[in-house]
Image (cartoon, rainbow, N blue to C red; front, side):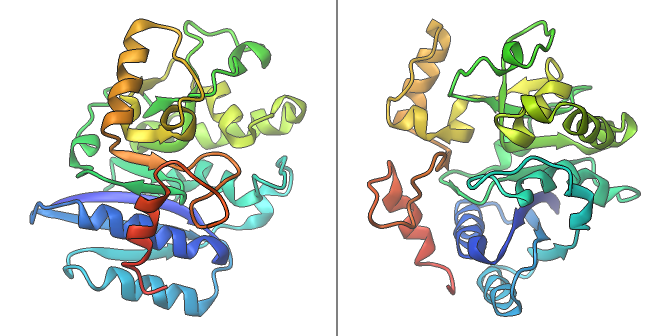
Amino acid sequence: MKKIHIAASCNTNFVPHLAALLVSILDNCPAEDCAFRFYVVDDNIAPESKELLRSTVSKYPACHTLTFFKIDPHEFDHVVISERIPQTAYYRIKIPELFRGEDVDKILYLDCDMIALQDIDELWETELGDQMLAAVEDAGFHQRLEKMGIQAKSNRYFNSGLMLINVKQWLAEGITEQVFEYIQQNPEKLRFHDQDALNAILHDRWVPLHPKWNAQKYILAHETVHPNRKGKKEYAETRQQPYIIHYTGRHKPWDKRQNVPAGKLYQKYSHMTDF
C-alpha cells in the first residue's frame, strides 16, 4: 500500500480548520491502495481538540493514521513574528528533521488554511530529482529575492504554504540549519518571515508546480495578472478548476462576515468534521 506523508503545524485555534483540510484530502482520494500518514506539529493543542481531530480521521479507513509531534519552541525564540504570522509558521522549517533515520523520502507540507478538491496522488508523484522541493510560485509578485539582495538565476519565488519536500536531500545538505542561520543574520530582510528565509536559501532549487495545486486568493479573485503568457493560461485554468484552494490573506472563510472566494467549499468540509 502506497504511503503518503502529509505534515502541518497547528495550535488549538486552527485545529478545526486543519480537520476540514484532512477531511477534504480523504474525501477526494478514491484509491484504496493509498494510506495517508498525517503528522501534526503540536503547538500546545488542547487535549479535547486532539480527540476531535482523531475522531474525525477515524471515520475513514483504519489504514490512515494521525501522529502528533512536539517541537521545542525555544528553538524559535529568535525569529521575527507578527500579528498574522506567529512562531508556529516557522515550525515547517524543522519538520524534515523529525524524520531523520526514518524510511521517509518525501513529505507534503500544507498550511491549515487550505482545502483539497482533487485526489492529491498526482501531486505526490511529482518527480523531484535532486531538487529540494516542489512548490507553486507565490502570486503576489513582490520581487522578494531582488529586495533581499539574493543573486539567483531566476526571480521565481515560491509560496511556502504547500511544499513537497525531498526529505533525504534536505537532511543531507543541512537545510534547516542554513535557514535558521539566514533568519538570525538577516531579521530586517524578512517581510514574509519563514517564506522569505526558505526562498533565500532554496532559490533555484525547487520544481515549479501548476498553480492549481496552491490556488491562492490573488489568483481566484483576479487580484493579480501573471507577467507571461504561459502563466496567464495557467491562472485561467486554476480559476476554472483549482485542485487545492489556499485561503491566503487576512480574510478567512471561517469568518462568516467576510466574502471569501470559494469560501463555501471550506464550509462544506468543515461541516463534515467533528468540530
